[in-house]
Length: 151
Picture 1: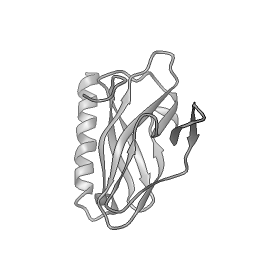
Picture 2 (picture 1 turned 90 degrees about the vertical axis):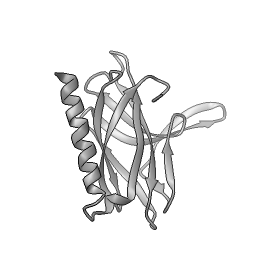
Picture 3 (picture 1 turned 180 degrees about the vertical axis):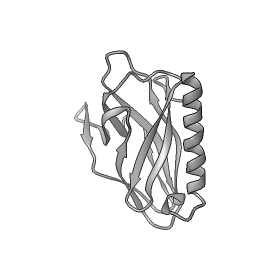
Picture 4 (picture 1 turned 45 degrees about the vertical axis):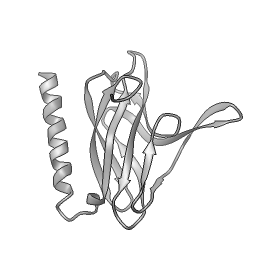
């Protein structure tokens, strides 16, 4: 039953996202490729989400916020190496150039989910709301995969 409900929820979000592309709002210019998050252990309290954002407009836009009911805190982060040490910082916004893209991937920009409500289980999905400065809110469905990402 739980799997059926997750499939139904996923279909609903994908259908409404497709409709948003044609209803005249600004979100039609932003598309999200293959959002995924690695599964977590029972005691893990945080996780990262990865995807590619395409800006199909003639104006730059910015990812300025993110929300999900799956975690108490969701925010944009950037991982980087500094003198041989991996570090991670909170980022206020991520610019997506006009006609270009921004990649959220391991070792770089990502969505950080903190204080997870439950472990992320491989094969399940969850909704994520992305707030853009110009395009507004774009809903996506995140696939929970293995640590290597989608196949």
